[in-house]
Image (cartoon, rainbow, N blue to C red; front, side, top):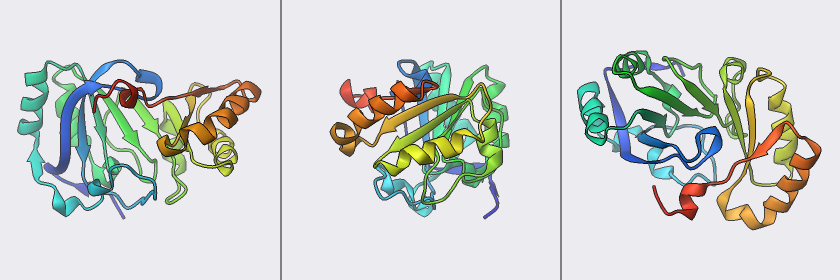
Length: 204
């Protein structure tokens, strides 16, 4: 499926919060979650985002109004799978306002738009493409079972030398997988542990 060109995008939800995961953990950011996803992770915690038709189309002016009202300087575009759409027009407009733009994607589609930070979190249900992995500033692999460690090492090979590498336990499996993640990081010291700190401090 090619990226869709739009002047309005299906928005499931939007909110100003603290980034809870990965390299930008602890920083304030305005999140815009686009609807539409065909990756189909069985443990996805936002499955209601999958059907784009269930979410209202929102134009650029409306998004800018939300962000300006919050006074946020960082904006996260997430999903769903945001790269199902061509976000060139959206990101160009947001960048012209002096905003920092962070992308969260599975890497299953070519990356469009202008980004300050790209987090690729590859999923086995729809594998990432090489171009997305090569552009990633951050590779964040969700660990659900032991086979995900080999999956992480496999995709590390396609990233740039400057890409930050994270392992993050799937939240429902945190207690089971964290001891194995700790052991893995001790043995593969390029990797770091990411925690879903927003769930600990109870923010969206």
